[in-house]
Image (cartoon, rainbow, N blue to C red; front, side, top):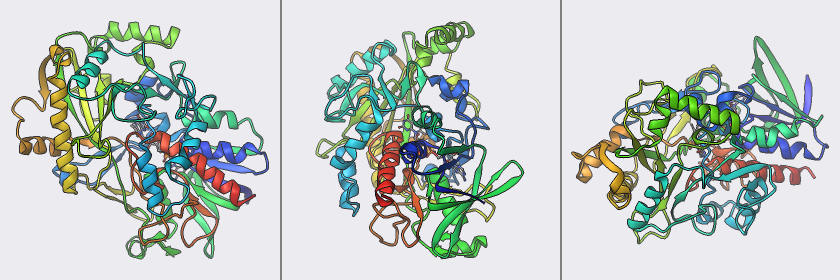
Length: 538
Ligand SMILES: Cc1cc2nc3c(=O)[nH]c(=O)nc-3n(C[C@H](O)[C@H](O)[C@H](O)COP(=O)(O)OP(=O)(O)OC[C@H]3O[C@@H](n4cnc5c(N)ncnc54)[C@H](O)[C@@H]3O)c2cc1C
């Protein structure tokens, strides 16, 4: 049986950073196993290819939740990257770190070393910001973070000015001193090409002889000797292979698959072993609990002047921006559709922003299910205004469906099960309306298509939310970090409670969601996790 010092399961946002750092000194033999294949794919590399990878059979796990009571029993689509780079290879590239208070709160929950002052240096080390370094931004790191000023659609300025008229301050850097306000997003691209965790961290590290990457390797089980993890079994094609780790097995399979793998290996609630037939190894009730996600809704407007619909809908428009992209890596295909946005407080008595804003200068309302609509925008000009909650209170679960490792787990996000989530999202929708009716944005609005003029009262807005709200794709929290309460899965050094040689290092360790998009926080977790591991083996 082949043996390595460290085996990492999953080459996603956190796993790629981890593989890079653990292999850097050359002292350790590191194996990273990834269920998907190469990220060197046209649709992954071209930023707007996001629309294609969204339902891609090979690049995406394409999970679906169970019916969600709070959303009228709708099942919600849960895309997850299944490719080198993981979800960072299929995400919308908006780069946000979160608020200082998010991390200070993690520390208050019993996780020393995870407060803002401790995590900021890791965020800075990861980053190569196109605006250069300052007290908050990093420069010279592997991950290129690009400001989009100059490439954005002309109507973004109407949106930002509309926000200002509605009372929000202008903010040119949501990753700076304050997150609050409206402005343009920064995105993870380098020279018009997606900067995934694979292209930024794993590819350069793959030149090292002590790092081995195996793709199309689906890990099916963690191997234990008593209470110590000693290796894993994976399936590749028709082969089943076992490999051993002399130091540690590290799960970086993401918030759906890390808890699934623990449960498949007998680590989880004892009742689950009874229903699935998986022999129990260690009772740990928190595995797969505490599932959190940001929930969002879009308000869709018809515009009286050209938006990206006019470019991306007709074939000749697509051809022209396509040629521009291929020749120069510029233009609308080189950036995210979420071009502008911001953060605001739904109630000014709150201490910090609780709602994120999105502006996309295109609209899509009529595509068939299964087709990511942004590849088929509306014929008439239009745009989207969206919100999502920063600090949802609803909690869900990820549970094993059966003992078959290829059976998708049962994902129940329980969106809108907490009354506070409903109330603040209604307030957020009301703010969207205020922004849309503030000059100069109001001057380009022809009509509100969804939800439309008949949706006025709080009850009607709530009904619309339950009918249309959907995931912002920030699933996390399912292997919660904490000091050892019943719901905690890993400690502040990311070691699985009660077991040896086993850590979880990915977005599933977040005790609570950071405010905003979580690719950056997942990568920070990868880098900080690597430092903890290296310290423990020094
Ligand atoms: C469609 C979409 C849009 C998003 N937009 C944004 C955005 O604009 N900005 C932002 O910051 N965040 C965004 N996110 C969220 C963010 O990208 C993810 O939360 C983050 O990448 C998660 O990192 P991770 O390391 O926890 O897991 P992942 O990056 O998902 O990595 C997990 C890896 O493990 C592999 N794996 C899983 N199971 C196994 C197994 N059994 N064996 C071997 N390998 C396995 C997977 O294939 C995957 O490569 C988006 C996510 C999605 C899906």
